[in-house]
Image (cartoon, rainbow, N blue to C red; front, side):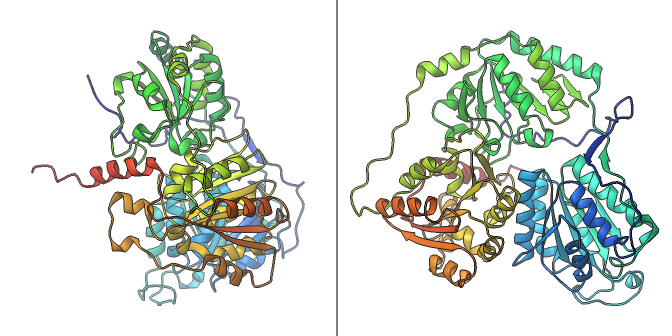
Length: 605
């Protein structure tokens, strides 16, 4: 059988057949302080929400005030250990919570009813697609208005308050409407625990008149937040491991490929251990870059079909067996459904399911457990990596620039590569930065994030804000195109207010370059801005900020020297002038293949 798997939707519904440990063990998220009776000012719904956020590891909440959430914000501010960060708009508040969750494991944002909720919705949808737990809290209508025929502001003019809820139902894994104090405690705890268990966003609407009211259920410090850990079906696990080991041990040149769901499965360490024990050549899917250490001894690079790291696709696609851990095969990651993979050669390991070839399939098996047990049964086989080592030819460096020669993008990224260390993290915006940043070689402990599944342009500005806030000991290097930056530029202001020291490379090439390579038209050309002038205006003498505009390599070298030297404690914004047709060769190839996939004619009826 010659079935291709490049078009498989590999995501599976969460398995419900896993329970708590036999001894009833639980996983404590964070210990609370010793129980104590609190005064009425602390025994409120608002303070309970605040304490729960602190318990699960959220120390920063991204918000936009509105009349329905103001009292709640008062109580969040009053909580020791919780920092409220006001954003310029709700979309960026959601993106910031996304970036924060990528580092801390969970994020939170607070907005107002409907006008705020529908504005943050796009960011929450992106977090859902990327399996990020975000607690999205909305200040809702007064509890007395539910069940009446009253028409409220911030609605579409109908006496129906469920529009916002219905919108969130498809992009969150749990929705709680808190309009009664009697069940508020249970609803909030259920929402938060569901977000953590499912690794998806949740929606909590809190009536605007309830946040400040004391209630007996909030009169003591909450019980330390805990989750019953999921466990694998042991019989199924043993059977799956034996079948997979037999499948791989009889292969001549097997390989391992890491996918983006390694994060949600918390299986990165288990994957690395399997890679070390097996001797297999190791690659990552593009959306998994940063999840697997690139200093592994047999690391090939990014497997991305026709736009893979040099010699990586040849080794992966010529293998007679490949194990994909946590893959997502969509039109982008499969380069327009053009991967040369065969299902009968593949083991697909999802967070709670294993599929071997064309069958069998094993459910209720956690990826982490499977990889750990498989490492004990696998025979070391370095054949695929030896083949790679024989054919590998090092890539060349960009051509030397002449004095005053217009700066080329590949020269820019040569210098960005030299900036990377364990003290940095890279945020890559949707666009050509996807492809240029994929080619960066990440040092050990260097962070890396981008949003491939959802691919919302403008994501990186808010994500940079959130990620930098979550990891203040790392300097974030953000690579953002001019078209994307125009969508969400305002929250550079919030970065300044927070005293962040990120370096933003704004690549000014006059338009939506990634769209140009898929399908060009006049709509892909944007109005040019004075980007450094804009950031200077936002700075307005408040906070630490430094800007530079570069058009030649010598100017870039000087700007990087300043940003990493005298201005190392500043937010640095470097506008890079690039030619509109200066793109990576990978984008040219990828764009033509995605264009072909988008242009397929309708099937005959």
